[in-house]
Length: 297
Image 1 (spheres, rainbow, N blue to C red):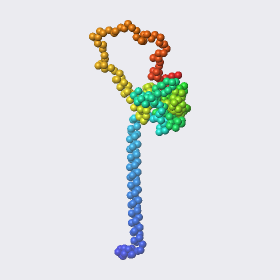
Image 2 (cartoon, rainbow, N blue to C red):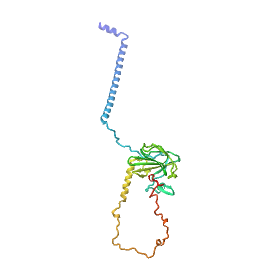
Image 3 (spheres, helix red, strand yellow):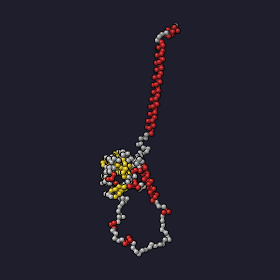
Image 4 (cartoon, rainbow, N blue to C red):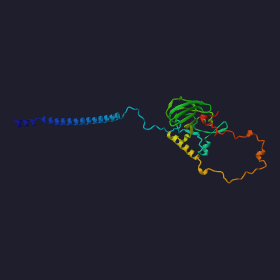
């Protein structure tokens, strides 16, 4: 009876389609279950990784203020927006520079030549332009000078300061913090550098002493103090006399100077006017008017 029922069941037309559908359903259920299991495992791993990273940062956070590992050391920039359109018409007077550079570092004022302690920067087209901060720092002085026009002084780290003169207008105030590239004002004209036209007079100082800005454009600000110290040490070593150079008078020298009874030409010329003596006249080296901090009126 059982065999007969099985044979009758096998003869049914709906049997094989039902078997196929059942098998297909089982396969689909298996594939779906496998995909869901893979996604759950992936999400668990991702959540576990994020939790471990957060725990690591939480463990390392001691609640104290974070200190930067390395202080930002900015490179000195030319105090203009477009450096390609700017040009230096008056250089910094450097005793070690060539004669041509030294001549271009002299400023004629009141029929006298003075050594420039900064650089005059203009545009090639002669138009006015915006003056920007060469380094980040604090504005320590804003004033109007009779020779240099509007002047801004900014102090920076490591005893470095920058001065911007011959400004037509000023957009900052004393005590304000500025970031490198911030606009300080616009270039103008002044009485001392009339030959430069519309320009900005820019000075770079280390511990109050002017240094050549052209030597440090594009260089880290820390390099300014280092090179100045090296130059100062080299000058000190050069000034120390050696024992071999010390000259002593000869002990055996007993020769006495000859005495002439006849007066020389200088003694005969007694009518010379003392007013014509120009040895006491000050030169630009002795009292330079190119420094804004010691302006000559």
